[in-house]
Length: 468
Image (cartoon, rainbow, N blue to C red):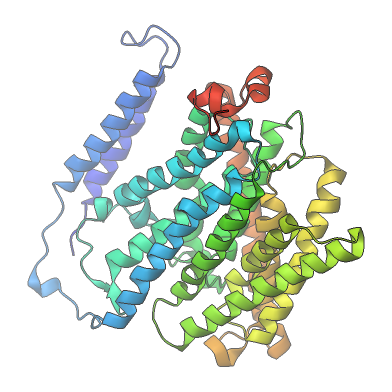
């Protein structure tokens, strides 16, 4: 198999560290001013150039090294191509519309662009080094290797589909995960700082966590399960959003004041639609498991919506559109980790309880601690991801996919899930906190109060979503 010699990888890492040191020295004669964008552009160029040079020295593959591979299945491949497009559709335009409709009209374009630029950045990062580090050859259960940077030599199959299709499918997961975090920071974070955050967060939070859970890392070896992203996507996004909220501080007006709730309804519909690719696609085939995941996804979303609406009716005597779409997302987030391990009746219970938990987090816990999670990323995604990941350890039916939950006589799985959830919470919160503090110290994190009042569309982009 092709790969990068270990010696070259070591030289690359050492030279990169040296370059970072040189470019950050204030006494460097090339830069007589404090850190500027020029030095970071040059450093990025150096990084990409070095990867290209290393790639050109990849070792040669011989026919003797070839190992038998599974046969390509056309139906599975077609389904995975559709699923990949569906998950991409969740971010662009699903999440973009969902989030932008919930903010004030003066920051609608900025909110859209945060998700758009994140998708583009992650697409490039995944191609350059993200996939091999997340799913490459395991190194001590912690991380993969640089053996397939630039998607080089990825020509074999992963099960019954091309591995490059699997790589692109996973890229769409990475893109929507970091985009979810943006919802907690809208209307006050600097756009350039958001770009830096995206790069650092994907590199130091998302990629290692993916490897631990899905890439054969230490949590996977322990027995932690996550069918479609309860830990990897929802807990990581929700907990990281909470950490960044604490660093960024509160807006002047913390209320959610949707300027166009209709956009959010359409966005929620697109998210629900795309979630079928997100969950059922994680079966990586077009068989019965994908069908089970498809049905469970719809059930949890529907029950979540109805539960939230019922709570609104009981508490406030009226149902709300915002509550309905929030409930559907709460149900979808909770069923995500368990969707390929539980039956439809369990999906019903998981979706219902998730709505109750998320409603409580938003209506009582958030006001109690007075943190400003703008669009309730932690309250919906974080809480639903935690509950769903633990629910897997309770409701997993061995008839569905082998795993045995506590309610089916299995004791160990719930313990594994508690460990996985705890590790994800601690790791994501800690590393995200460090990333946020680093950006705040060296680049600045928050726009001025004047710009916040003026709106980020005008102050950050000199554009306006609406001209009157």
